[in-house]
Amino acid sequence: MNTPGQTQTVTSPQSGTSPDCPTTQTQKVDELLNRCPPPPHWRTPAKSTILGMLQASFFSLLCITAFGQSGLGHAWAAIRLQDEGDESVYVEMTRRLRDRLNSMLVVGSLLLATTAVLVTTNPPRVSIINYTLRGPYICLVAAAMILFEGIVVAGVCFLWATHLSSNFVENVLCARRINVYCTLIMVSYPFFCIGVGTIFMGLAGFVGIWIAQDGGLQVVSLIIGVGPVFMAVAMFAVLFIGV
Image (cartoon, rainbow, N blue to C red; front, side, top):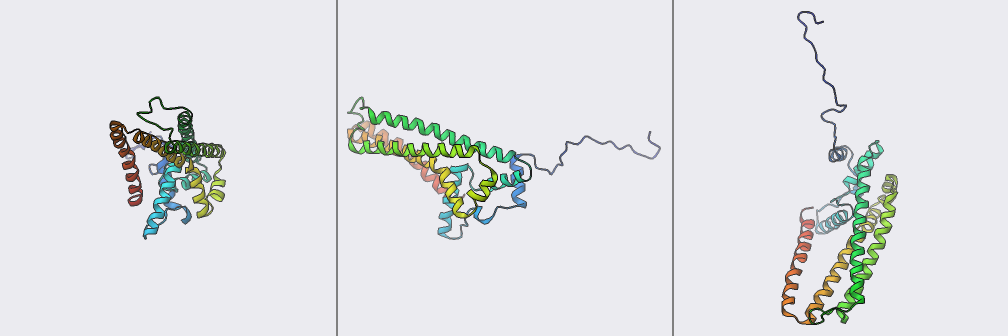
C-alpha cells in the first residue's frame, strides 16, 4: 500500500535486450565492423590510382561472384561473431555459399547435357542453322570442356564448404592477401566457367546461323545478342565506377 505523497512505480516486462542492442544479422554485422574492422588484406584495394581502381574492381567482382557481397567485411564479421558465441551469421553465410554452389552445379550440368546433345546429333534443318561445321563445332567442344571443369570445381568447393570452420577460413584461406585472392578465384571459378561456356554455346549458334545465310534469323540473332553484351558492359562499368 502506498503512503500519501508517494507514487507507485510500475515496471514493465523487459524483452532481455536493450533498444540499442542489434537484433538482425545486418545490424550485428554493421555493429561489429564498427568496433572491429577487418585487417588490411581483407579490405577492398584503394582506388587512389588507375591501377588501384582496376584492382578494386577485380576484387569486388571476385567477391560478388564468390559470396554475393561486394567485399569480405560480412565474412570477417561472421567469424568474429562466432568467436563471441553468436554462430547465426556464420551458419547463414556458409548455407548461402552451399546454395550458390549447388545452383551452379545444376545450371552447369544442364548446359553440359545440352552441349553434349548438340555435339552428338545433326541439326534437323541445315538451311536454318548448321552447328556441325568446323567453327561452331569447335565452340561447342570448348563449351563442353569448360562447363565440365566448372562442374568439377563446384563439386569440390561444395564438399569443402560443408565442413568449413571459421578458424580455417581466417588462418589458412585468408591468412594473407595472396591467400584471399586464391580463395576467391577458386570459389568464383565455377561461375566464370558457366559464363564462358554459355558464351561459347551462344557463339556456336550465332556462327551456325550466319553460315546458313538465313537473312531473317541473322537479324534476330543480332537483336538477341545485343542484350547480354549490354548487360555485361553495364555490370563491369558499375564495378569499375561505383562499387
